[in-house]
Image (cartoon, rainbow, N blue to C red; front, side, top):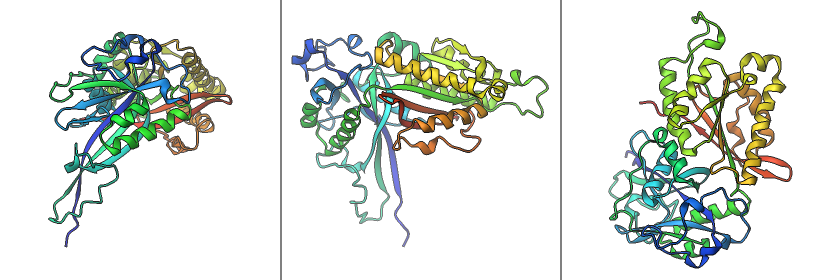
Length: 392
């Protein structure tokens, strides 16, 4: 008897959170889609400067789905060749009308697709279906991220790099509410969404609501050293490298970075050039990030990373930017030195294994996302994710 296969429907979403506006606290829970809530998103979307242990200090965004008559976190299915992170930002934007950026990953849940919208649906129940008819079991798998709001100018600036976000139809989303966590727990229809809430609150209570984001990029596939006739500084990326670099821009845009730093060598500049252009950002060229400088003065190269982490910490603490994220494009040897340092400031549960100790450390044209918080002992990395572009 042949084994029954399992098919997956991939989806992604998130929990948007913001510090409560005390002048509008009495309006928590009112309809923001129809405009009856007095909170102006453009005034409430700055990085959270102080998340206290009390859940009443902040509020979360829920959506109502008329088709299923339920309240849930905004989410949606992946489009063909779309990454989960890109789906999450796009779907949340479409369903809520808010522009968001990704933070640390919260959780992954699964349930049989046939239970979509049913009140009894729970996560991790994929094995409950006995497949009596030996038909393939279809499981919906959803990834959730922490999310913060960005203002309209920042959202418009990143749109060419990210791609279109089309508002959901009224038949898909009938209402959008901002609620405190305790209110959200009562409003949510499904147990699986309450499980996601619990995972989110665990991060918030651990002080992970105030984070900065650093995206390390390894330059795209470059022409061979053996065949290239020019200098190392002018060796370019290949057509395949260019395609991967362009695709990577869609993933970087999920974090709406406001700063790009790069080695001035051509293969690094070409890797982030399209994203910089589409995001209307300049590229800060740092000579210390070249392979030559790294070979001669590795401490000088490392100081660039340490200084940028300190800048991110300071900006987050001062709430001096709408979004606090930096892209750094690097060479393979430099990445190895950086990883040695980053492993020392990574929390044990932050997937330290992603920071490989062996060359080549990262695939060409890929990125690693580091979410960083300030602690009394200095910067600490709380979450790490690999980002691989989808070239098709």
